[in-house]
Image (cartoon, rainbow, N blue to C red):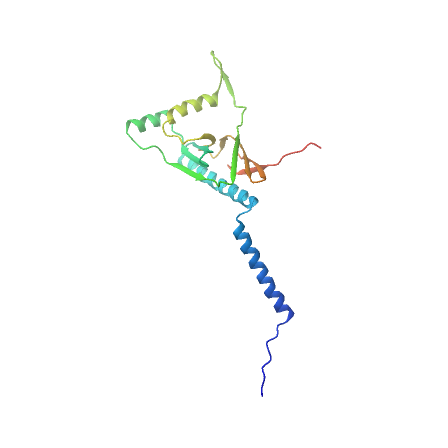
Amino acid sequence: MNFRRPPRFTLIELVVVLTVIALSTALGVSALRGESDSRTLESFSLNLEAYFARVRYRATEEGCTWDVYLDAETRTFSACRRMTAAENESRTLNAEDPPPVLKWNYPEKITLTGVENRGEPTVETIEKKVSIVEQRRQDEEMANADYVPVGERMFCFYADGFTGGTHLLEVECGALTRKYEVSTLTGRLIEVKEEFPR
């Protein structure tokens, strides 16, 4: 009679099998739990940077200024080409459609706050001191008032590739908070580190 011996496993084979089971369980649990706050924040910053790059490309390609608006209620960034008063008048007379709007929605876990940058050059007039930039902004807002997106204007991407407007974003996701500055030269996000007194 020929009896077959039951198969034997070496210690290394058992360790490998247990390691595979432990890894697959860990991956399954993390997938069920969802994305962590730090990963959501990182993903948000990369996607926002990609969105800004798209808007900046359109501004430089078309040779005109694009404005980016933030609507916190709908969690939407909207960008549109800024028209001059003459362009808007021509468009109205010829019954043309307004330029397209580029939109991007950010995740519900993210809370955004924009901090406005001040210190613009001023010019003396007889009536009052008026900011040159503010006067130009008011003229353009009147020309673009009928088609600009809902929300607050946050950034401007100019035809030469520079960025203007609000340059500081405070981003919250769960317990994590980060501050980003938008580079005036490249339009990329730069994390602002808090400096503590020594």
